[in-house]
Length: 188
Image (cartoon, rainbow, N blue to C red; front, top):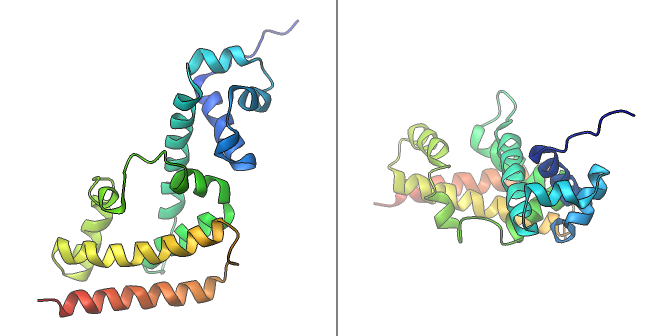
């Protein structure tokens, strides 16, 4: 008889993320995760005492996946607009993960300003600041405008209320970007 496969913590988290992808975060449970792993509930509960702690670990994994997706901007494309388009594309391609990340209540930040001030965006904001030649306050204002547009489109698409039209959304994100930069430059 072959030895039993050891179910690692990483395997459990990966399985929970896959359950989210297929069925939504509401359906993550010890039973659905062990079904994904084809094992008993014992290994799942060994690594995670509660389903909430499992969902938090799955959230962190999904957040990492999202970050990698956002930063994969094709060469030659404006990085900020590329990130904005990738944000919307993620909602198109990974609706359930998008909903988990931004509509489940599992985010550590309570609001958009907390997210901007979290430090994780510091490299992006610093690069924007240098490229725009603006102080950090104005840079944050520009980022906030584009982020709100991108999040609005992505949320509507993730909830099946709008079809993805990449050309239209790219044009609107560019318009929002240009308008935000112009407004920030005119502020004195």
